[in-house]
Image (cartoon, rainbow, N blue to C red; front, side, top):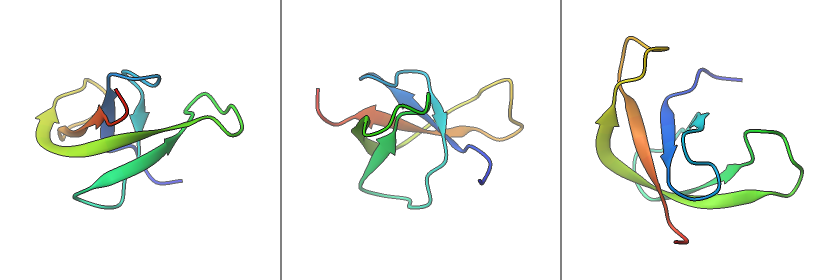
Amino acid sequence: MSAVNAMCHGGPFHGALVFVEQEVGIVVVADPGGADGVEARYLITRERVWHPSSAVPFVVLVWADG
C-alpha cells in the first residue's frame, strides 16, 4: 500500500488519512477501519492541510454525500 496523502473532512470517515491517486474529481473511499462494503464518496479539493505525521501537506477530501 502507498503512503497516505489525503485527509477526509466530514462524513463517516472524518479525520481518516487515506491514499488517493487522482488529482481532481470524486473518489470512493473504503472504510479505513477495514469494514467490508462500507465506503463513502469524497470530493478532492485544492485545499491542503498539515499533519504532524508528514513533512508535506495532505490533500483535503470533502464528503460528497452530505
